[in-house]
Length: 168
Image (cartoon, rainbow, N blue to C red; front, side, top):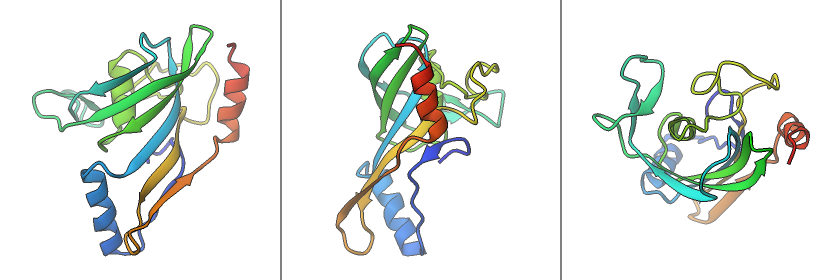
């Protein structure tokens, strides 16, 4: 999870578990659902961004949609609620797992995350503690038992307060 992303997190206690989890992510069998607030109203209530992600061509610290040397990246999204025409509360499901994938894909649609100072506007109108991206659900087959398990994390307090503050 990116530094300013909140939510569910898993920790692999050994190399075998890490390899197994990495393989599930590679095979697209690892469930990752996020909630976010983005700038603007999305044109479609749901959609898929299928655009490769690689290093930004001029800023090596950033990632970008990069068709010449990026790796496959697929993000599905749907709008939970439009907020006053200025913001949208959305859910994203990752099919792949590239660095900054949701942040880069939404920014490429011209709907960056609220509070994302790297891929969005520098101003932070709500003085948030970080970007509005939350790992709501993580699900996978347990590396030892093979049983499918799922973990969820409630939205953090600052995120809940923001949602209440934004006009519907």
